[in-house]
Length: 410
Figure 1: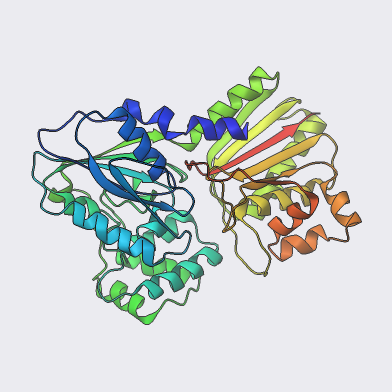
Figure 2: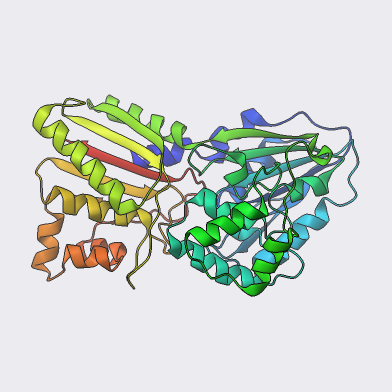
């Protein structure tokens, strides 16, 4: 099912049907995200006219292209390569005419990869703040609100630079609710949030931002491009893949195998360990009472949970969810689960997620590993690697966020 979800969101499959008509002038391609290189290749394979441009993707996610330059940079923390890529991309859209077309290939991960601090800010300021945000427990929407107000390109600024050219953004969504302002922090769309909203997020989570960041936000110098701005009048968005589509592909596979499949939601948020407890309770109710679904069945969900980092372990939100789920089930027979990030990276490591079986906790204890201790240390990767149950996909070249599947045999 995990493989089917990832396959359904491959750019080669889902991008060609959404291409715009060719312009009278130039066609310039720009983009950022973990899927941007694969999207570039799919675009090149489907576009028979002149084409040029550049995109930035995560290290290891590059794909060979002939007409579009693919630049690799760091994720989740921005680096100098991402800064240079952002500057190059901004330069490509300067001086365009109304006859020109910009195709923006946008996917998850673009917020960190398209690193262009506002004047007065440094790359180190953004790296410091990004690390604090990732450990804070803030939602992706809250993190991206801050990012939009500290960037020279996000929050509609890149789209404004393209004017008066037509802009068609092709998006692969990796965020709950599929809001374009949260996919790579909305570089081509108007942003209704404000600097005051960004300051409120910092206050809510007690995040100590660098002084220069606070100056930009408090002065209003970081205000983003708003909806209705005339520079965005010729900018449009087309979704080519989203979490719901991936869940439906997994559900179809489960039904073909003879299991009832239920999509709970494509937008689950909250602390990963709390989501684990809730879905464990649901699995128990199904097994014991046949409510709200009869077993055997598969429960599918997507979205983006959060982890408030308190320990020094190696983890990510998907393995944190699984470890919490396992502790709540405590070896309950007949319940299996897989959770993984469809981009192949859960947290900061090249591990997509893991598999939970009824005997996972017992096997760990035989090895002298405390499941509860691993959860408290945020050490989900360490826990599941010790059991040989990590899920490693390598670069998937797409990103439709988290995937969770729970099989309840009954």
